[in-house]
Amino acid sequence: MNLLERQILTRFQLFFILQKVKNSLYILLITFGLFINGPADAEEEIEENCLATLE
Image (cartoon, rainbow, N blue to C red; front, side, top):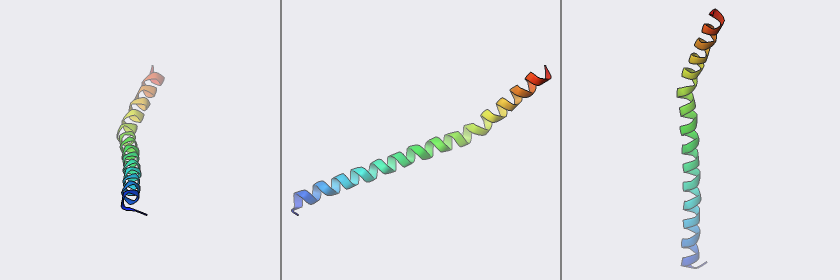
């Protein structure tokens, strides 16, 4: 394998590693966002349901 082939291979490997890292970060951000917004939304929904039953 010559130098050019090795450089191309390492660039592809780096590209794929970066893609995986980026995808993992997106997944982490989404789950973190759901974790933060989830309980608040659930609390709001429970409150609305309680008010609806009281009326």
